[in-house]
Structure formats: C-alpha cells, structure tokens
Image (cartoon, rainbow, N blue to C red):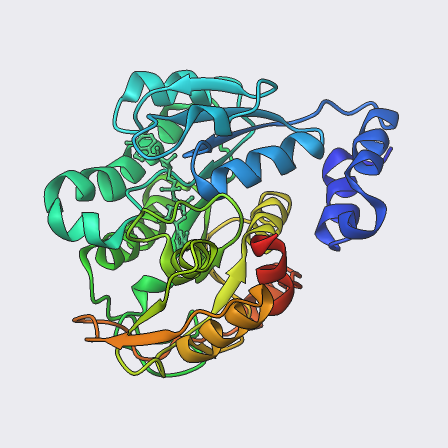
Length: 338
Ligand SMILES: NC(=O)c1ccc[n+]([C@@H]2O[C@H](COP(=O)([O-])OP(=O)(O)OC[C@H]3O[C@@H](n4cnc5c(N)ncnc54)[C@H](O)[C@@H]3O)[C@@H](O)[C@H]2O)c1
C-alpha cells in the first residue's frame, strides 16, 4: 500500500500539486485509506498564516490555528479550521492546540521589526520564549511531531556575503533578527538535548495579497501598493539602490507544505527566497508600470541600520527541500495589484 507520506512526497514533494491540483491529492489520500493529518499553525490568523491555512485545507489536512489575534484577524481563519484563541506563551493553550496535531508550523511572532525595537522585552518574550514554550510542550507530548518554524533573512543583518547562504555569517541588526537567530540556536539545542527535530525556514521579503500596509514590517510592496491605489507619490528611503529578495506568499506557503512532507531528523535551516536581487528603485518603477499610475517618486532620508543588499542562496531550498519559488516579481505584483 502506498503511504500518505509517500503520496505527499510524490505530489507535494515534487511540486506536482501545481500540476495535479489539490483535489487530486485529497482523492488519492482517500483512495489509499489513509487518515488525513492535522497540522497546528500558530499565527494562522496572520498574513502568511491565512494563506497557509487555506492551502492546507485545500490539500485535505485538518488544521488547528493557535493565535491571540494581537495582529492577526479572526476572519482570516476559515470555519473549517479549529480555532484556539490564546497565546503561545500560555502552556494550557499550546497543549490544547497540540492535542490532536500530527505536525506543527510555528509562525506566531511579533513580526514588526519596529515594534520589536520599541517593545524590547515583550516582543522578545513572544519571539523567543514563545518558541521555547512550543519546544517545551513538544518534549511533554506523546510523540515527536515535525516542527517547522518561521525564521527570517533578518538573521543575516549586516552580512554582505551574497548570495546569503545558510552556511554564511549571521550578524543581526535588530532585536527581531537577534531573536530569530536565537530560535535557530535553541532549535539546535532542542535536538541535541531532547531529540526534537525541527526545520527553520528563513523567509526573505514576503509579499502578496492580505498584507497589512499599516504594519511597519509589512514591507515596502504593501506600502507602495497602498500609495499607488490612492494616487499618491511613492516615497523611497535613501537613494533607492538598496536591494531586496522578494518572495511571493504562495511560494512561501508551498515551501512550508513541502517542509512538513520532507521533515527529517536534525535541526535544518533553509532559506526561502527567489534568489533575485531587486533594487527599490526598480521595484517602484515596475509597480508604477503595472498600475499605469502617474505617481512620481520622492526620495527621503535613509533609515538607520537598514540592510544595503539582500539576495538569498536558493541552493538548500532546491537541493534539500526539492523546491523552487516559481513566481517572478512581475507576476506576483500583477496578482497583488489586481
Ligand atoms: N512577512 C514577511 O516578510 C516575513 C519575513 C520573514 C519572516 N517572517 C516571519 O513569518 C511569520 C509570519 O509572518 P506574517 O508576515 O504572517 O506576520 P503577521 O504579523 O501577519 O502574523 C503573525 C501572527 O502571529 C500572531 N501572534 C502574535 N503574537 C502571538 C502570541 N503571543 N500567541 C499567539 N499568536 C500570536 C498574530 O496575531 C498574527 O496573527 C512570523 O514569524 C514572521 O516573523 C515574515
């Protein structure tokens, strides 16, 4: 008999869900008589979480969301998912949410770099201690669950050794980046001490529909899109030659789904990026073209501590996860701007 994980590997693992469609995967899983798996998504009411939960449900997974709605929205969680409103800091809520789970994707965080700077200890508690709470509850649970968690390109910080590779230097420039790096270190320690295996995905600059333009971390694309919609001038901090590696949210979701299917023992770290470097000036130009807007561009003072260049290595993503981000920037922007 073909196992569910085998089917998962064959369809999701090969990226074939793009070809066969999610219904086919669900049908095959039913035909094989396998029980559909339940995935706990912490932070499932947020930007990436909302896209992920929808995709998991489409693929036939049962989904539990644990979110305290501090920045996420209740309406982002479909009725088909079980919703536990609570904090990752609260062991009772984590235990309740983990109860029937076969895998955990941990996204909950204070994702605003600026908020982390302003509220140092409270955001550190969520971003780092919250991660430890998940690990701690996993050590107490009956079986080892695959744990995939969101790390960030912010761990690279000042490093300009492009393309940024998982084996390269990490020098975070923000408390947010420092906490994400610390989660990776704790993930390694959890494997050594408790045998808990994890996969940390370092997301680069994620964009797509549903991102809150009001959030300081929602990033430049959501802000430009909002400005263009209102017919406003685009504001660029600094000379605009700073670069970013933009990755479309559906590709990030694909990598997360792939990761729960490709989970392996150890404490792996993998970039989730496009491998393409785009300057903010080019981004603004493309977005103006895509919207046929007449907006001008205004340059203001650069931001303190801003990373100059960013471009990730896709090597581990391709080789270890057998995954590629397929959405090029123009296509992703066109979808977003629709
Ligand atoms: N968006 C990006 O470009 C990007 C880049 C790199 C890494 N990340 C990471 O990816 C993950 C998801 O990011 P996002 O953009 O969807 O952020 P988001 O802010 O939209 O979502 C985070 C979610 O976590 C929830 N949350 C916060 N504190 C919580 C707590 N104590 N208990 C339970 N839930 C809590 C929020 O309510 C929200 O729904 C985060 O870990 C973030 O750091 C995002």
